[in-house]
Amino acid sequence: MKIDRSFRKLANTLPYMLAFVDNKRRYKFVNTAYENFFGVKLKNIKSKTIAEIVGDDSYQKISKIHDRVLQGEELELSERVELNDGRSIQLEINYIPNVETLSKRVNGFFAIINDVTEYASAAEVLRAVHDVVNRQSKTLSTDRIAKLLKLGCHYLHAQTGLVSHVTDDDYVVKYAYSEAEDIPADTTFSLGETYCSVTLESNKVIATTHASTSSEYAGHPCFEKFQLETYLGLPIKINGQTWGTLNFTSPEARLTPFTELDIELMSLICSAIENIIINSSKTKKLEKLAYTDFLTGLSNRLFITERFEELQPNDNQTLNITCFAIIDIDHFKTINDNYGHDAGDKVLQQTARKIAEQVRASDCVSRVGGEEFAVILTNIPRENAQSTLEKLRQIVAENKVALEDKSVVNITLSIGATELTVDDEFNTAYKKADIALYQSKKQGRNRVTWHYE
Image (cartoon, rainbow, N blue to C red; front, side):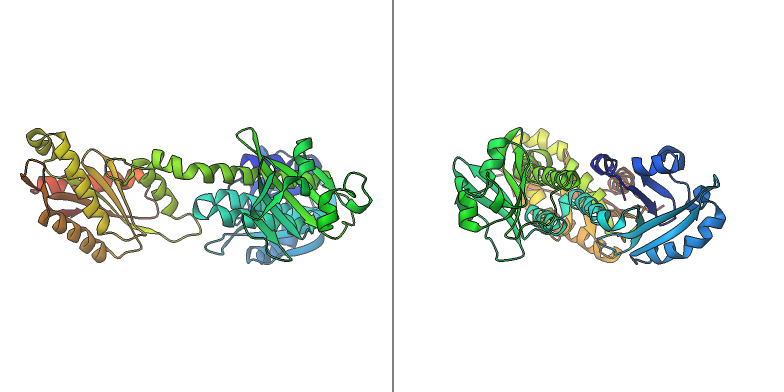
């Protein structure tokens, strides 16, 4: 698990001790409260095992507990621990296994020390927000925001969570989670009929737990119309401008006031939603600019590089990429020299289209420069990959490109391919395929050659 800046910043504001230990029982993160209590610094214990810190004898007493946690079991216990410095301390600990979404494998656990009952859910919010934000590329923005709204509702014990976009006097629901009735997207209210009008007017977090007894809210049109007792609202800012609101509501009064921690955690969720909205709104425009080769319509080198990294396995995944290939148009310079660059562009476009037609939706084809293309084939046996590459080579060779002057150009391809291992990075795979491509050229072009170690 990666510990990012947002996680570290919020974790260090928590008043209880928090540690993350990987599945080899090595410390990977402890917050400030943990450092202060135990008189240690993260830099001094990071990557050291628990036994090295607390002593072998003390660790023997709790190692079986950790065995169960690393098997995926969540545990609460009160334990006396003997430290290396001679201190004997009684700790209340909640162990929460960290389970990878795809493989369901436990890659470590959180240890929440002290007030377990009050703060365990806060750590879960931290972890869940971290997971949602760091899996943005793999999930639709609607699903990610719905998950964050559900998370906020469960943490606050609220009935409904909404993300609204406000334009003039229109309050438009864009995303919603409700444990009561569904609220469809684009449901529109007058801004003045919502508590969010107060939030936007004050331009800060606004909260009430007993609206009916509040002078500010009891006579508000929102209370008269919806009878909402509990409300927590935060302004959503996009590029420095007010975009709308995030709010959580319930018809029941909340038993306890919202705490600073509650507001801090909901602010974190709000920031995550802001980032998702920004990224979502930019995606269609920026992906075309950043990831597309405009001449051929294929993705470009940047895209296939990032896609390669997404598909390569981490500790909890199996290999997704099984073949990487580089495809080069033979004698392309001669085409440009003899027929001009417009003819060369047409050859590139038609060849790109033919290549793309031969691969699956799960595969990836990109133009990586000049007359060179790269292909990722996923979850495919070697012989099937060979058949795919050979078929696209043949189809391009059989296809003639008609130019504007009525002349016809025959196109052939040289292809270099490599099978991948879990250790291959993009540059490594590219070099292997490039070596194989050189062999295709050397052996007469118009062929598929595989790299061999």
